[in-house]
Image (cartoon, rainbow, N blue to C red; front, side):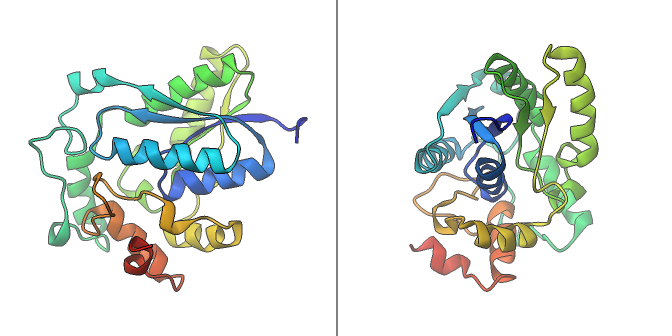
Length: 230
């Protein structure tokens, strides 16, 4: 594995990023995982989960603090006075409705900023790839979750990094149900992930992220409620 290409993995501790980490450690040498704190409500749990997952796999982990995100975003993920859509407000089976609720949790250029920071780490640490956790399902509502977005970044990185860092994402063409199916074979610790938009003692089960996780688990014979209690 020492001769394998190196990668930086963006790790929030959710399903998609954890799946990509587990794939990366099998195919590449993961130089570091990065967890970004831009003031999101789930930051504490994301950092705790990502740190534990990285430690379990013997990978160095680093938290990148981005407090200035608050200067330009009023998203429900960050602003204390803005409610995150949850419960009956969320209809994950309707793309049209999801497009509307997505506006509440949209963070301007978040993935563009995070991946550019990761590309800087990659070049500085001699890594060839940066690996985010995207999926086909949410690409329908978030254009910065698409393969086209990654290919555009590859072109930009060919100018902004001397080593021509590239993106890699093992889940960009998979929906969450498929990610869980493949994750079972990889041994993903589904009960120990953090899929929630909030930082409570347990997954809330009501936000869109939790609802998508629950549906993906159920499609593979797993119970969200039972895993939440582990």
